[in-house]
Image (cartoon, rainbow, N blue to C red; front, side):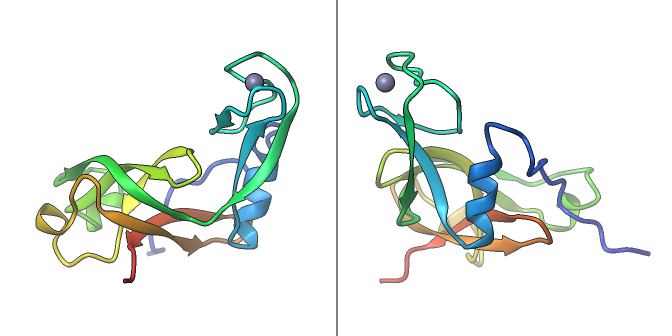
Length: 139
Ligand SMILES: [Zn+2]
């Protein structure tokens, strides 16, 4: 039986293609408005702050903090059910993007993840894109 795989996004959508392209080089790309400086993530065509269409791609350091999180203890999905318990967290990157991801690389997500903890991106490798996950920041 094949190993169940994580459900993956399409890498060829017009708005998000640039983001997924960056993940292949382990770059976490986000957008910033050239008119009002608003940081924009997830990728879009227009700035949600001022509606201008001049968004510029930038690369994050991949460092951030846990804004909030939850620990999943039960899942019926073939990929995720073997991973419980695992932490699902909103991560605030230091440049401003906020992304929903997993905190990995902890022994016990029930006790080893906390709001405000420093994390850094870690890439889960796939054929056409890589998935940004987050691990505790090495000090
Ligand atoms: Zn703007």
